[in-house]
Amino acid sequence: MVIDDNLISGVLDTLELPFGATNQAIMAYHRVFVRRYSNTIACLAHLPRTLKVLEMAADPYGMTAVLKKHLFDAIELATFGKHGDTTTIRLAVGSEQYQFKETKFNAEAERWPYADESFDLIICCEMLEHLAMDPMNVFTEANRVLRPHGRLFVSTPNASSFQNVVKCLSFKAQSLAPHYRAPKSMEGIYQRHNRELTPPALQAMFSAAGFNRENFSTTDSYHFDSYENNIVSINTLRTIFGPDMRCDTMNFLGRKSGPVTTRYPTTEELYLASDHP
Image 1 (cartoon, rainbow, N blue to C red):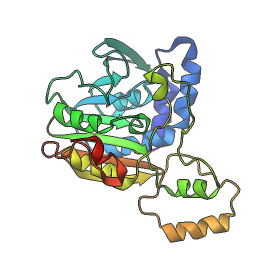
Image 2: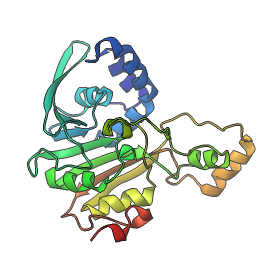
Image 3: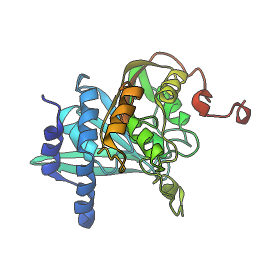
Image 4: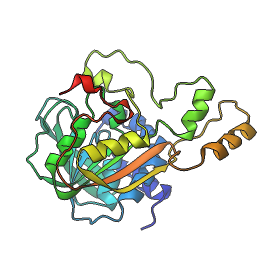
């Protein structure tokens, strides 16, 4: 299997979503993220198809369809909502019909409604940056519901990317989605990026939660905008900063190696020690 943008586009070309009248708008959203989807699939393609998988923040299900079509047979879904409520999500890719159990809960504020050691792999794509209060709850609960040596995969924007360096020099907001929202509910708060992480911060969270690093890389998933800066100056900056861990998206695959060691890590000012015992 060749992992590239064409693989993702091939799924999206025949994907039928459960959104009725808004399907066209959601499909346009998925088209924006074709490169990110293909980067994620490349990170996971070596894993056995037989793993029992939990996909976090699965809605609006483009990644779900790709994962089911090309990588894993047994996938459950999770999304934000009233704790413990479940529904059935139905998708089609061409002539293939898929259905998934989806469970609702607040991933950063609640105990996840799964038994201990329920899954082999948890996939968490572009979710951490939306969390507002306690992202370590994701890591500690993932440790609990993963089987021994189970894996947690996270993709999330890289706050220290070269693209953000250029944005900073151009007096632009560095986040990919910095917009304030009108949060009539917690769902509104979660629509924006509340904090984007750096590579050291993401490593610290995995380590604190009892995960060893299996693979950690950054990839470019989004269009690079020079923001009217001189391209010669930008190339000089690239030389100064170097390419290492400077792409716009972090991809971290960690393997459960033991229990949680630090519930509130202070690396990169993730948590204030004075707030917690």
